[in-house]
Length: 255
Figure 1 (tube, one colour):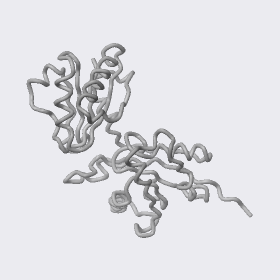
Figure 2 (cartoon, one colour):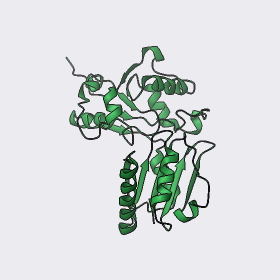
Figure 3 (cartoon, one colour):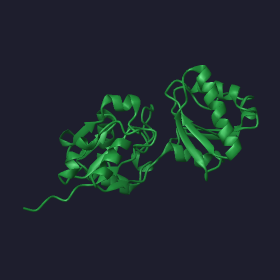
Figure 4 (cartoon, one colour):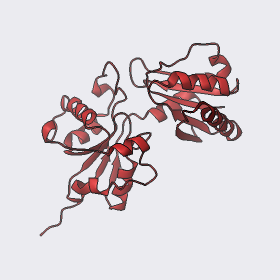
C-alpha cells in the first residue's frame, strides 16, 4: 500500500485591516498567488477561528474555495499560547500537524499580517521542521517591515523587541536601553503596543528619549487611512501624537 506523501505547511499572511471599521477590498491588499493557495487549502491552524473564517469568506468571494466554509478543518492554537506566546519552545504543536502527516497541506494564519512574526505560530513552524514537513511562506503584508522601510532608519541592522513593559519605571528604563543600542551601534529598534495603549507609550517615548533621536511610527499601513511618519523626538514634542490610541501601530527608533 502506498504511503501518503506528507503535506506542506503554508504560512498565509492576512490583511492588516483586522479590527478596522472598514475592510479594504482583498484584491487590493493580497497577491493573487497567495489567495489562490489559500483558496485551495482545507486544513488550517489559526489564532482565532472566527477571524480565520471571515478571511476565508473574503477569499471565497474572489476565488472558489476547495471546500465550503462549514467543511473546512479549522483548529485554534490554545489560549495560553495567545497569552504567553509560543516563540520560546514551551508548546508542542506537533499534534496539530497530524493532517499534514496524513498528506494534507495545512495553512497557518493569524488575525493580521504574517503568522509567527509578532503573532503566535512559531511553535507550529518549528514542529513542521522537526517532522520533516516542507514550510512555505507566502507573500503578503508585514507591518514591521513596512514600517521599517518607510521610517528612513537603518534597514541593514535592526531588531524587533516585541512589547515594552507596562510598568512605568520599567518601561522608561527599557526605552533608554533601546535608545542606547540604537545610537551606539546604529541598530534600529522596532516595537509594538497593545490596543488602547498607544497614547501612554507615545508620552513615555517623548519624555525619555533624547531630542535628537529619530522616532518613527507606522499605523494602518496598506489601508486608505494608513500613515508612516518619522521625525526627531524634538520635532515630535512640538506636535500632536501622530497615531490614534486605538489603532494598531509599529514604533521604531534610531539615529
